[in-house]
Picture 1 (tube, rainbow, N blue to C red):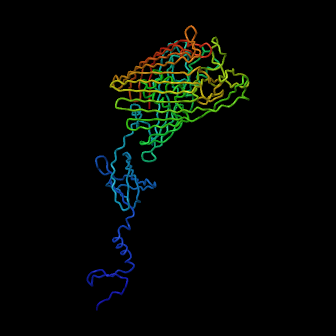
Picture 2 (cartoon, rainbow, N blue to C red):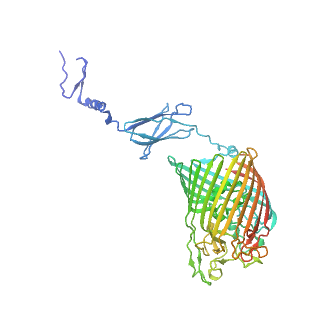
Picture 3 (cartoon, helix red, strand yellow):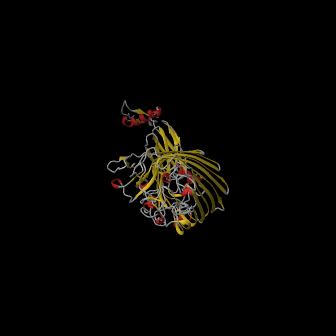
Length: 614
């Protein structure tokens, strides 16, 4: 008896003998039909792409258990997978587009592959080779003290310095807890020799934090916040306060009086943020060093040392005419390097207040006119590094630049040499209801400044040669400031001079020097600095007989020699000497009326100290 299979119009007989034949039921047939259709038309299923590869170390050995992130550049979508025991990874069904791959494993530096393009149905291969991560050199206190490792965590770095020494000056004044520059330069009020604590000789003592974090391949967020601290007092660097502390005192009783950009701000050096690209450069905004300051630090043989460099101690050159302008608030800064060539541009937006004044000889606070500030500034830098030679050219222009001179109060008289409170827009004395209190206020000269500078350096081991020149042109401001205008650090000006210049003032600054590497740890640096100004007095009656004014031609010179020895990467000790002298109009301490000269026109300042950086 022969058994019969049930009849089924939808069943399929497989080839074979009668005894081997099997019948496929319709419910079983559907997957098979789908499989046959896929085999016949493979393109229907290959709408996605596959990306695979092998992760290895530098020797070619496979790395297992590596975290692999595949990111679609066009959409931002990511897929996270893990490489298997043989280092192999694979991701299927990826949409067409551009992809990046990042591999991460403990003990190894992250590795990224970019520029991968996938088409529909494509099987692409991208192998990844990973390098061992650099051990943390700051893992112990000993390594921190003896190496130059960075205190970096997740792209954020803490840095700083402590620099202090002891010195002697032939003609100095009592120290101020808020002064950060010492007394190495000839001092207009220096009246006797003295031993003193010398702060910030090679570097500014202070703290800073900076960061750089990549948010797209080749693009990073950057920021920097830094401030200067006086090592002898622990106070924030504040030059304005050195003047204010002497308000109302006779000149012979002054402590150290200086001017500068650091005026007690929480971040008195820099405070900015922005974006950076290896291809397109960096764009940042905030309080930043002027382009002239960057160039000074790069081309000064003494690297901006307060103890041994005139252009480091006095920011006239770095600020393009005024030391307060060595840093710009509310400024955009752009830097780009392309091979050996680099470019910089900077623009400062208006900030602060312009004060108040009136043309009336009896003006008061009730009838004066409010002034608008016009303190914009801009600058450009072009430079090149070619083998052992580097050079830069910098141009800067600053409107309503302010130079703070001397403490306030007292009559304008050679016999009682105080700085007067004077509304110089109309030369009317300030008194009565319109007077802005002289407590916690400053007195300043306002000018519009333009400056162009060229600097170069050349390395011829074991020597490094430096040189530079700057020309500065100053005029009375196009838009004057009034009493009550805002100065650095938020201080108000209770005395303002907008007509200080009889004619345009021309300042020229030269410098040169050489650094000699005695051995791998010791450098010896010799520097010379020279500044001169024209005779912008009208009428030109400047002579020993007629007397000098601050508007008469004059010169300033400084020479210095010092040695710096590094015991470790972080700690060094130094010893050196600086000698400076002034003549003519630059030897006038108080510029009004018959000029009141410096007590002494020279200063000798040997200094010894140490520095720790991190």
